[in-house]
Length: 76
Image (tube, rainbow, N blue to C red; front, side):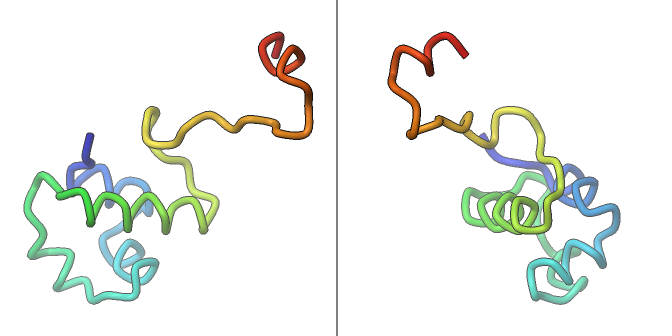
């Protein structure tokens, strides 16, 4: 599953903010296709997680608490 360019921009609010978060130019963003590839999607999701921005459902696996016994994890 990959993001669209519009979804990526929406995560950051503007194309300029997206470009800044990725360390690339807004011109580079404008040249992206409407359907992002896996690498572009991973870059956007990674930058969003680092910036504390919400990402569309299904792009991040649920957090598993490795400090609790498995029986407690299943109950959560």
